[in-house]
Length: 230
Image (cartoon, rainbow, N blue to C red; front, side):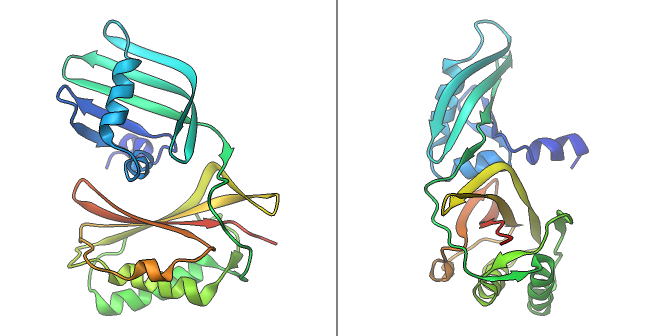
């Protein structure tokens, strides 16, 4: 992937591109999270509603809420008759609806990842590319439960050729726990292997939020963690 394409893919603001038949032809990582809860047609209709009268670009400031996220503006690009694109600008806000607790012990997430990856490599002789933010500090986590979850996540993919792991802070997103603000950490597993029946739901906890979704023949597991330092 070219550096500019990777930059768009990792943009914290959702970006969608549709063809003239309303078929979604591109969505970045953040957009794919949104599409787990709403239909793509709703985004397409939003793009049509705010499209420029003639070919070009149109940006509008507004208050927009889609499921659990709020947006303060959108931009629509309509440069030819075959495609229309839309970008939503996320408001910096608190995720009030996610229930996290502060239980756990102070740990190094990279040590846990290394352990789980070592165990996964014993069972699956495949590629495990890593995209990690090395600046992440130690934070509180229910270690035993999280290790069991992460081990299960690496095992649940069916006949994968690779499992990619991405870890970093979700810039601009926070959670309030007992009236105190905490940043959020995103751990994303992506693979070409499918997920059939699984028991990941039994490994949920108030210490993290877990989602599974498919997009463009790829399966992704998203785990959101609060960055609790105290």
